[in-house]
Length: 366
Image 1 (cartoon, rainbow, N blue to C red):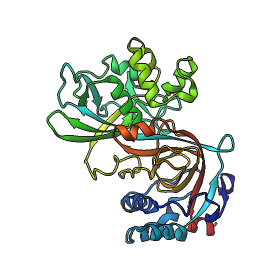
Image 2 (image 1 turned 45 degrees about the vertical axis):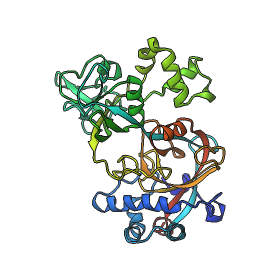
Image 3 (image 1 turned 90 degrees about the horizontal axis):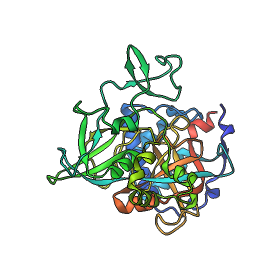
Image 4 (image 1 turned 60 degrees about the vertical axis):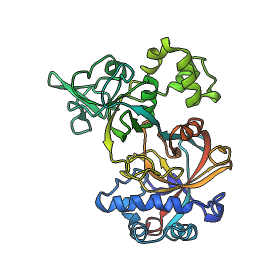
């Protein structure tokens, strides 16, 4: 696959708002964390051809430089060239938003705190082409052995009905199953413990089943108009219809398992798929099969105005991924931690133009 199939060269002057993005130093800070991580554990190159090795000069300088706005912009212009990303479908890409929930939790179960977050079970097996038996859904990346054969793992309904009870897998307990469901959707959480302590948990693995967006289902069922589907309207529907929660939530068969992580820097987000803490407003989740972590993306979404009151035009760094994030011009913007960030993130569903900044070493050496 050649770069020209998905990437069309443009100039920095053609990036709408490139010179007006005053927070590029934050993007460089995010990139620098990836540069340090990549020094010990290289990232895998995505299938669109942005090879990890081409980042070496940028990584080397990022580990030693300052992060002023002017220096940051010059850094990216020095090491990268901008390319418009061709969407798989249509003329424009699409962005949503996500955040790190902050919820109350208990280290022991009580009558109030009764909804567990589970760690990865020891019988969950990674599946790839090397061990996938004939007949197993090719989508499944996780499974379990039953009678000596790999079969699909327990789905959300089975787990919530007790499939994992009694195995000591609980990391903690939450008070509300809807809160727990959205922690699953976001893939991480900051926990306020009843004893006054704090913990952070993040994605460790999943059951392997396909992700199903319940907002789309509610729209298909005629419960909420598609253009009004947000995290807030979904939560409101669930609160109004407690007797229908099982039927809806169990449609998303994917179930997430967690691991505890160090608290890290509290002004940053959780450690995500690229193994670094996320930068609020500057980290983006992309299709990991197509793209390479740490790739800078300039996102132009002028209709998106409620992040900071202005058209969203800013440089982001690819540092996460997700089951629902598929396609060359599809991204999930990390907004931050807590309910205010959740209010913003939950209402982001906007068309956007994606511009990938490709390493000069890759482009000029091609």
